[in-house]
Image (cartoon, rainbow, N blue to C red):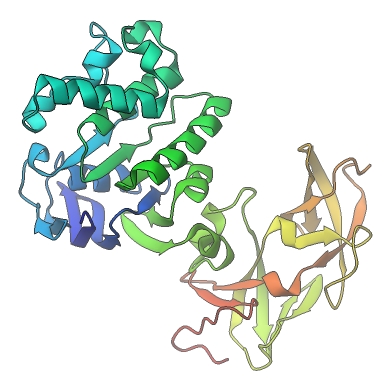
Length: 372
């Protein structure tokens, strides 16, 4: 078993708290992605799991064993770095097998067998005699992954391994990483700042901000039911629209509109923030109405995206975004009539940012002190 348990983990660098009181359990065989903005503590967390950074407070267990004070070589982990960390004077094969005897006791035959097996999995058998300078970025990434596979670790740790690749190759390598995990089933912790990688790769996604855990959930639940405003705005591109409203008796009021909140007749929280994703707003002439009322907005910017048309709308000086159907003839200055999906509304506390309400009946959110 190779589950990972982080118990009350804190990391300080002098007066700076990089990670604060983090609790997380990674299941055996799980692919978990840690995502967040720069400086949120995600790479520091990974380095503490690996043993490359010491822990200021708390306990780390791998496979039920306390490894908090152990050396990296004793933890049964293999790490894939952002810069690949390949030796330029060694062949791909030598890079993959170098140092294996420091991580365990292997015969020459075992090393050869593992190298060839990893190369076949990664489809790089014809590249083993080349040096890194003769390899493309994607090929170097495969060699770095091969080095990790050769060690047959309990845990893979990956620190933004695709960030140096171009956009097309990143998409390809994401698919290959997902396939590789399905094939090997090794517990994997993957760090990225790219929310698309997080959503497409992770069995679960951990969102960090300011060194603190914001939410951990499956990708779809993270998107559908954010627990606070930070998660709602960080996950999703374009980000969720946020509009200041006043909520009384189950109705969200704004100078330009009033929106009844489904199944929330008694909800009265005063000043709060209404969240609605761009795809949950629509032009009233594009589809059958789902909202009890419509409202008008002035278009300020249009962004043709090929598969959709992203509109920047203005209501009473507040800007938000709408995903419209492509190939519409809409120009800045036009007035459009909008509807919304009443089952995809969210409310957040104006001061704390915590979720107050999701209109989807599959979830119920009632923070302390809120009447509903």
